[in-house]
Structures are given as structure tokens and as C-alpha cells.
Amino acid sequence: MIDTHAHIHAEQFDADRREIVARAKDAGVSEIVTVGCDLADSQRALEAAREFRVYSSIGIHPHEAKGAPADISAIFEPFLHDSRVVAIGETGLDYYYDHSPREDQQRVMRAQIRVAHTFGFPVIFHHRDAFDDFVAILREEWMPGMTGVIHCFTGNTEQARIYVKEFGLLLGIGGVITFKTAEAVRDAVLAVGVEPLVLETDCPYLTPVPHRGQRNEPAYIPLVAETVAEILNMNVDEIGEITDDNARNLFHI
View 1 (tube, rainbow, N blue to C red):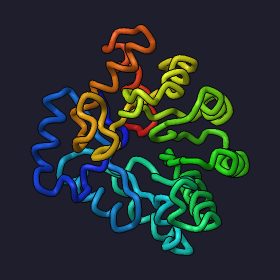
View 2 (view 1 turned 90 degrees about the horizontal axis):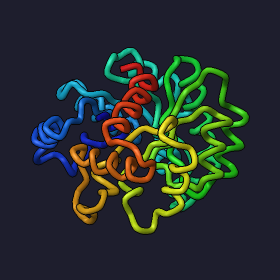
View 3 (view 1 turned 180 degrees about the horizontal axis):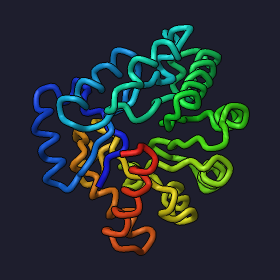
View 4 (view 1 turned 180 degrees about the vertical axis):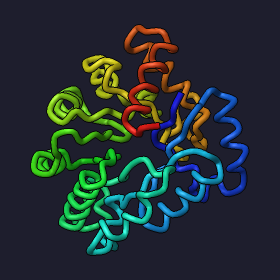
């Protein structure tokens, strides 16, 4: 199985990163995408990807948008020639925390979509409590043939259908789907089926049940797959096969 969204380069793994990667392989995780959240973090992600032979992205998270450079394309371009870099992001809007002014979040999201279009990369999106503005920007900036994923999808059925049908986006399903409070997410997965899904951990965050409250890691991907299989009344191997195909097609790995 493929963990399409992790942060194995994060400081929470500094003491045992090699062991984390080894446990993931032992659990059947074949590939990992470790995701950048600002320029320095993206550099660390790429260094980890090179060392552990996984993949990375380069992105500016909405929390960090206030400090983003004016010319994002010029800053990103040197990263994009490395074969370990497979996506732009995570980028998007987060009005729940509002760590950056909303106008900065919107500017940086637009800029990263344009970079992805120019260089032919998929986009990893972060979205929280900003659906109307998020979709409005997509309707203006998203171009035919572009691909991407709504990382850590926590929306409802209507939102899922808009992402999938209008924009052709995939939905990143992680540990949240195992939470008792995530009924809306489970309903959305049941409504759209497995075809637009990929699996993720977002580690070290959002650890699935029964490990909730502990540090998350890629080895827990099978727990997410098992929950999706239960929701859709499918074999877990089928879930793994379909979501892996989606991930490989999305990231060209």
C-alpha cells in the first residue's frame, strides 16, 4: 500500500526515522510521499526522500502563506527537476486557524496551482473551513488535464462529489475515517466509492484507532484500508490495489 501523504521528515521522527521506514516496509507499505509545508520543510522532505528512497513534494501550507516569496515559481523550479519530487503542495486554505491572512492564503494557493500547471505536476490540497472560497479559486484556476488530491478529506458527501465530478480530484483518506465522530466522511466514501480514493496517514498526526493519541506512522496505513473496506463491503486487498493504482497514476511513480 502507498502512503500518499506523510511527514516522515518531521522532527517527531528525528530519533527513529530509519526504524519508522523499516516498520512501514514490514507492514506492506511500498511507497511514501513525504510532504513539504514551506521552503525549508520542503528541502528537508526532499533530503529524506533521497536518503530513504521515497518521494516528496514541495509546497507552502496555508499556515505559512504570510511568509511566502513573491515569485513562487522561481523558488520552486530548482526542486522540480529532482526525480524524487512528485507533487506541488500541500497548498490550499485553512480558515479554521487563520495563521496567515486569508488574502495571502488565496494568493499562494493560486500561485501554486499555476506552477503545477506550468510544470505538469499534481497538486496536494489542504482545505479546512473554507469550502466556498476554495472551490471558487479552483473554478478560476483549475485547467483541463490537471490532477490532484484533497488531502485528509473531512468533508461531506456533497463536497466529495464536487471535488470528484467537477474537478476530477482524488480524495485522501486517512486515520480520521476510523474516528467515531467521522460519520459524514464515512457517508461520503460510501457515496463516491473506492474509485476516487487514495490512502494516507498524515503522520505524525491523526493516528487511526486503536492507536489514537499516539504518534502516527506509515505502518498504520492498513488500518485505514481495513476501515474503507468495511464501509464499502470490499476485500481489503481490492482497496489496496485500486488506491495504489490511483496513487501511482497521480504521482507517476
